[in-house]
Amino acid sequence: MQLSHRLVDKLLRRFKDDWKSALGVFRWAGSFPGYEHTPEIYDSMVDILGKAKRMDQMRALLVEMNESRFITINTVAKVMRRFTGAGQWEDAVKTFDQLGTFGLEKNTETMNMLLDTLCKESKVEQARAIFLELKSHISPNAHTFNIFIHGWCKVNRVDEAHWTIQEMKGHGCRPCVISYSTIIQSYCHQYNFSKVYELLDEMQAQGCPPNVVTYTTVMCSLTKSQEYEEAIQIVDRMKMVGCKPDTLFYNCLIHTLGQAGRVQDAVHVFQVEMPKNGATPNTSTYNTMIAMLCHHAQVENAFHLLQEMENVEYCKPDTQTFFPLLKSCFKTGKTDIFLSQLLDDMVNKHHLSIDVSTYTLLIHGLCRANKCEQAYHLFEEMIGQEITPKYLTCRLLLDEVKLKNMYDAAEKIEDVMKKL
Image (cartoon, rainbow, N blue to C red):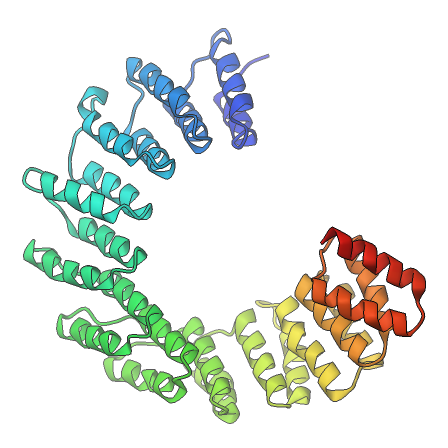
């Protein structure tokens, strides 16, 4: 047989989570007559060993690679990431220090690789100390400071991230939308909206206006904190600066309007604003609309939207589409043909699998509707598909089947409960 690099690459991918088998394949291929590993194959093996925390084997392979001058910046990036991920960040720094022995330079690109690796593993203070040592002979760029902004936000030290913006300007680097938006997102997580507005104004003043992603983040966070009217006012802010909404922004706005009880406004956004601005609804848009209409007892309108959705080529219903509709069946007492038809459409028409949340909803709803035989049938179906029920679901169903003297069913439910 002829051994190709493509075949070896496939085998290593196959054994990416089994380092012993991967190393066996690697060594076997390396001894094959007429075959030589490429630097990319070596990189794959290095990454597999690093992921499995086999650091001694990884070091040995690096020595072997260096003898053939196969070590590239990509190799170094993988090695530093794996060392840091294994809690050996000092070895990642040593790898950077050894760049010269690999025939590579210590420059802005390689420094950023090291800093990024450390910051992603929350070693921001260590990264900062290294940067202060290196910056006298390696010039930072905008990406360097964005790495620190992400890092400080990751460890929830947002004020340091904000201060990094000023440091960035001091080095002649201009902050971008991503720089500001990362900090805004962190302030949103803290519900510190005074800081959010301060940064939005600063962005505008610096000639770096927020984009639609920034505004969507702020609106979603305001909605989450139940500041609905304030969230809706974000639309006016966007219009003032000429920022065009996209589908994700409209999805968030529809959800916000629904939460604020402004159903007609949400419908207007869906039917008028979105087509007017060329924002195409997606599955999430329809799901948000259907959930909102069901929540406000407009179930018939929700079903009309489902039918409309079924005729749209670019988005199809998913499990989340049907969940509020199924919930409405129990609220309105339509647990006979109507519920059965909905489930039949879900499974047979749209080929959707029922997930654990939907099974839980159905079993609980049928038990409360005094239809525990149907509930138990769904329970058996759930177990047959190896979906683990919640203990509360088992408890509720067990009490109901006992009331109906369904002793065999009760015994099976108890067997399942023992395994939970």
